[in-house]
Length: 159
Image (cartoon, rainbow, N blue to C red):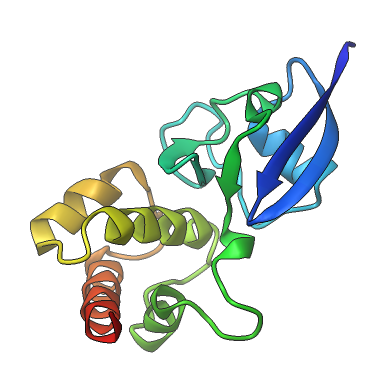
C-alpha cells in the first residue's frame, strides 16, 4: 500500500493526513480525520449520503480519491453549524421534522446548503431537482423540501 501525504483545508481548518492511493475522500474523512458525519450509503455515487463540497462544487466523496483533496477546500456536515448555533437549514429540518433515521440527513443538508449558496431563492421544483441525487428511505420528501424552502426564506431575510 502506497501512502501519500495530503494537505488540505476541511471546514476552514488546515489539515494533513496520509491517504492510501486507493482510499476515497469519504474514507479519508472518516478514517483519517475522524469526521464521521459524512456517511457511505452506496459507494457508487447514487445515493448522496456522502455529499461534501469541494472547492465550491457538490461532490459524492465516495467517488473522489482522498489524494485528490490535496490543496482543496472541503466542507462537510461538521462545518455547517457555528459552534452551538445551528445553521438555519439544520434548525428548519428539526422544526419541520424533516428527518427520521438521520442517515441521509448530513448529505441532504450539505447539498441543500450548496443549493442555497448558488441560488438563495429557489423554486420548489428547483429544490426537488437539486436534491434528486439524495435518497431517503424513511421519509417522503415533502418535509425536506418544506424545510429547505423555509430556510431559504429565512436566510434571504437575514441577508
